[in-house]
Image (cartoon, rainbow, N blue to C red; front, side, top):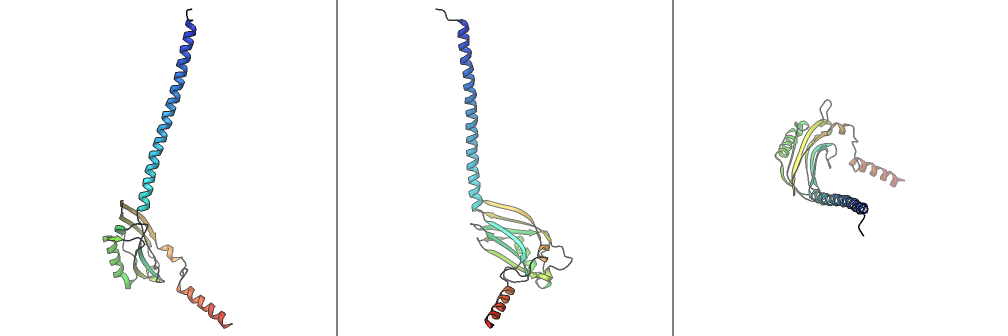
Length: 197
């Protein structure tokens, strides 16, 4: 029996159609596999970056109230995080504020930080007193300082990190922070009153 040419063409056409559909699904599958592989590579790179960031020290600098001397303004640089910072440098766009009594000390502090410190251990901070608050924060002074901080961590250099310190914020802040001697004095006074009764 001779095959019907129309039937053979129909079967060939159907086979070509299904082959085309299979090729489309194969292409989509390859595209999805490629996307999945790229996502996996991106995830590995993200995890690597998280590991690096977690091992880097975090160093910050500020000019503000001295942590233990009430009413004194200080320059403070602190290293936080799990590792030490090396070659820590802080520069400001102009001379640090100070009162007349500590002007030389403030100049030395600024020069020391521009030269940099070779090693700052985790949790360690450097503090330089700049003067009594009401003399440093005198009326009419410009309190905005543009600063740049840079240092090296175990994975290389960090920064420079540029920021602005605005001491004008201190002029309107609470002069007696929690834990100050004034609060201890008030607590003792209240305790003495309670004992008298």
